[in-house]
Image: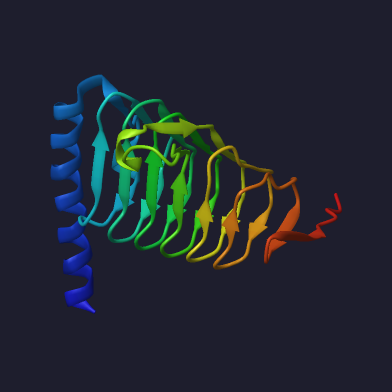
Length: 186
């Protein structure tokens, strides 16, 4: 038990040191007003080249979080949880709502490669559309969210889903279909 507590304390100290270094290096590209309330395991990578990254409040991430903001803006809401191996790749705009949770190995891509029969695919650039994830959304492990997708508030995306179309609020998405609309009682 003592070993666990010490390892968590060391991970938290490493997070603060690494994050302060990132904050200084990235200057105005990263906004994280209450980073001291958050907890990210020390094995994380954040690249923010020509875009901005905003954490609206406290959030928690387990190991191996990878965030790439090549351009555009990534906004992460309050009280968001990322499990291990989450990868977010932003060239346009990604918004993640408050109280959302991500299972292990969830991937978000707001862009796709352009391609045609002539030339190298890697030289043809990208197309991109924003991703919007509402409040209180649960995205199951190993899911992939593609460009142009909007996921409504209070929705659940089943594990292993590839989401390429928008999902209405209060719904459960499984095997490429909305299988249930949840009825909320007030």
